[in-house]
Length: 362
Image (cartoon, rainbow, N blue to C red):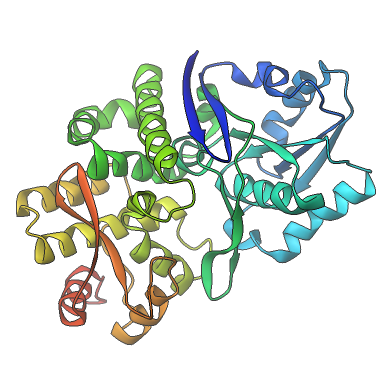
């Protein structure tokens, strides 16, 4: 087992990484836990819920299962209320722990429920997708979507621990693996050029789910995110660099309808667009922008964005937490392994959009 620590004002907690962690979840529950609410979905429950319930039952505390519909389209108020209904119906109190077993949607909604229920209860992240393991389970950002914008309603609420069982990736569909790899390679682009080089060299091993390669990728991703989050828990500064590609990506998700593209697919495509914008605005070497596009393509994510038209693109991107006074701000790369936030002239942005969207004739 590998342990990475996250240290923030909102709490210090471990990320445990390795095979077989699903059988050791009781070790991460606080001693004063009164009961456990296991929150999962209809896809993950048949695979892992019974095993996790057995592991949690070793505490001797009652375990209540809350099974939600699967998919980004269900990351909304109605589904969130299903969690609250179950917690109230089962008399879950303030000393209970919510356990989020699933991908990013389950983790985000469980964390938001934990932040809100009785004004705050504890929760444990147990991510089962690569994207959740390398990104969304770490750092305490929790949210639901609104029809007008992704993750616009939420709270910062740190978990008591993150338990990453790399064996769970054996049941992950190929498309979900590719989406998770998009968030993985992002860390090399924004913070560690050597890691980006390693991802390029290791792409075949990652796609075939080589255990050593996967553990290396998850560990390094978590180390980089933990370092950034520890510096800026509430995204008032440096943490915003973690959103590289996300201004474009969130616009794609909202414009197409949540769930049409996976989050990681949209982010992967958004990183291609952001790299192109970086080349135009900050002089990122053309060779590096081309490397971003080639690696996103190699992991199996789209490299051409939907053609919404310029006005629609701008409207979608303005619903972004980095926007200030209506002015769009983007995470850009002055060089591989470094990231900065910049405003961009609309004309340059229009040119980049024109060159990165998919045309019907293409």
